[in-house]
Amino acid sequence: MKNKSKKMMLFSLIIMLSFSLLSLIVAFSIKNIPENISYRYVNQRIEKRSWHDSYEIISDIIFLFELCITMITTIVFFIAKVKTHEKIMKKTISLWVVLVISTIALLLSNTVVTGLSDENDYSPKYYEFSDNQHTLVFEERSFLLYGEGYIFQIQDDNSAILLEHFTTDDGGRNNGMYDVIWFNDHAEITYHTFVTENDKKTVVVNFK
Image (cartoon, rainbow, N blue to C red; front, side):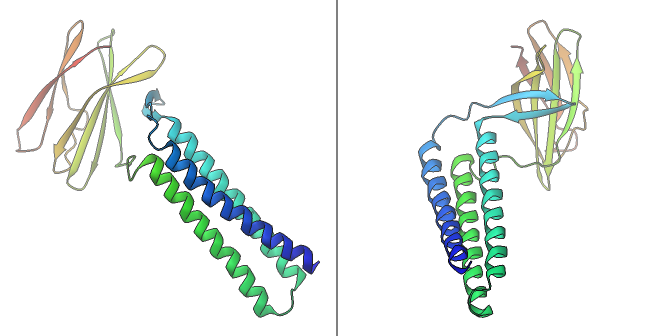
């Protein structure tokens, strides 16, 4: 039982270190591949989709796999009661340290591929406008003194096309209060910028 537990410990360490190295190699190999972002309008909110999502899911699965291996190995190692409790603790601690190192490597690989904080939440809210021919959805986000908005055109299949991005001062939100003037091939949209109390800006978005 002791030899088996030692072999299992060695196997677990090799697996986790291998995954760590492999994840970093893959990350640096694919980091320059275009993200090819697409959007969909689902349940009154805009969902951003790209191959980055699949990469993050795979990273999560690898982490859960490594965590399970670590927990199982730790349990088996304690049951085996290898020599003294002190040595058991030393060996199991080394296993968990490797798990931490592997987790850091996975996080680093994610950062290399997807970048730093490119998908902040900032409490998004959505507002829909339509002239019965075209549908626009406004997404508002803000945090402290930073505010931004996105204007999407919704297609018949609920796919969304990003038409415009704008920012506001002092984290201001328009809260859906937009003036939209519709035309056959475009719309004129006026919104508050919050630079001053009554400051407004008008943008033109062309329909796709």
